Image (cartoon, rainbow, N blue to C red; front, side, top):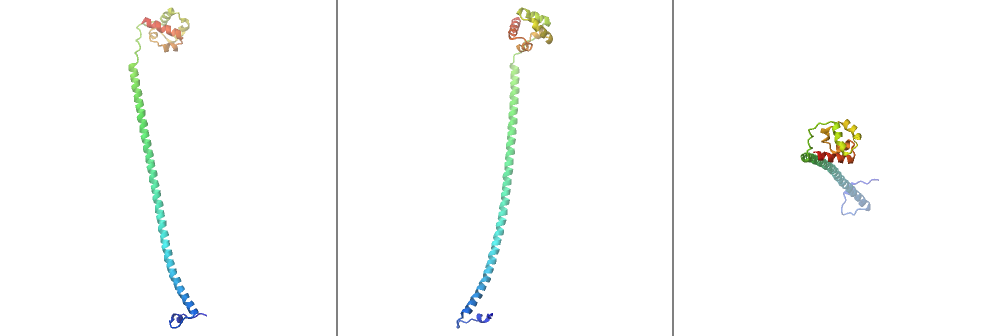
Length: 187
């Protein structure tokens, strides 16, 4: 059985309400509080949704800014690396040029300071003349005769032979020394 609400709403203070009436009024008041609470809950939920939405937007913006900052750092690092490589290449090129210039200067100085080879004597004797010159030195000219003829050594060539040339022609150390001394005493 449902009791009509009008008599309850027309509550007068002269009469004391019954427990049942008080319960119904409390229920109605509770229902009113539920409606108010529902509105407050809706407002709170709306505010919470708004805050979540703003937080998501803020998070997305921060993520985008971090990504941009990372990209800028990477670009700066790349530019720095490229600049270092360019400096290293320039330094290597400068060092290479300096070494080449120093080598050229050293070669020029060595060429200027190198002793001039003595001019070849005017005589153009044959290989037999060279062998005749070697005969008094007690050299075994028979061993060297074939080599001297093969290499075309005549007096003009013999006059400018160096110790290295004699070594290449297979003269032993003692014979090389004798030849150099004899040639020095002749000139």
